[in-house]
Length: 497
Image (tube, rainbow, N blue to C red; front, side, top):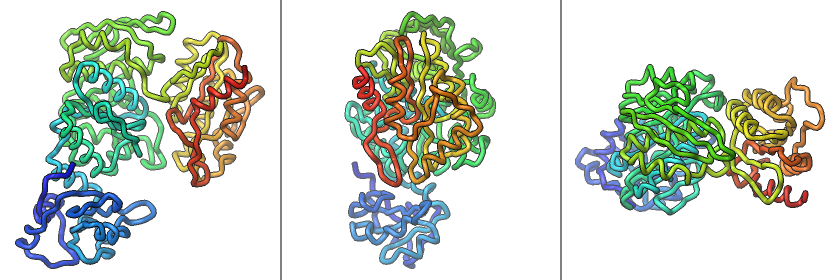
């Protein structure tokens, strides 16, 4: 949908911008009406404000001429970008990213405040919590939008996601479309990159949830405390009304004490938390549970989601749904039907006599948690396949290698998405000083590594292919080649019969 129009003068005041390139009076600026906003020159429509953001390799202002040729009538950028723009009014700000969110929210009339929006952040669990919430709301006949790593959904309509949290102009446009289609809720993942890069500037959430925090993205944030600070920045009245925080994680406990927001705490074991389990019982592939919540609410149900961390994810989803007004009786009825997110401990079954699973685990903590969970329901060996991505936090590679060795009976080190890095060098960093003895080994080619793992599996064993989860491609030397762990694993099992 198109936004509400605003004069350049009004946007100038909202962004705290100075005009450059043109010396225009207030009367002249008032007459220039902006009817849209985007940071992508290919998406420009006549009447748009083009926001030129400095990137890692190129400045968005380099594409200003293209945007203007498509009908952009003004550009907002920084001082460096302003020197590259000719022919239209330029609004100059120190941080175009921060201004982008504020302006987009204004132009779309703050759509997220009309959607009972819910933002989930944390190192692991974001995709699962948002997926479960989406399912709970839909089962309760509350039309819901979803934005996250795997996909974006507007009710029943699915759209591919290009990143976990969209750029601010895209985010506000999506939220406005959801409002136009009468969505009652928006549930979305909020990455630490998105918070630090102001993609959620101008957004507002009824609830923000914190799942956990462990080492990841230190290539971007520098250290774990800076990473935590980026997450914690979401937990202010600037962004939200209430916080839902898992206090079992040490950083969650720290956040619960320091945030200015009212806190609804959750815990798997701490019965002083607002929401907590009082009984958990495994029965085959099913887990039966009882939990207590706000005001002494008792919910009794069952789930086929595996792993203790998935109980944490489920607890957060249930807590937020109840606090959002969904009847606990309806939730209890819907929980047994809930499915996890694609590529999250997803089972591949083509009739084999061993368990085969694919998971997105790509941090040391996630690898350890997934393998520990698999161990709990496996009678035989745990055979694991794992690689580390290129051009990402390299400090976690030896930690992931150690987690793989300690959590597996047989560990197969392989490639993930090496991108522009040498996969052999990544593997050397993963292995480090670890001693690997047969049948554990290093197999660079991911398809061959998966086939090798399958060749070793016996009845009662479990194979875990980790790292890529739902991804449909493998990035090697600048090219994205078709590759789906689930398909490759199924083909390997079928071919081994």
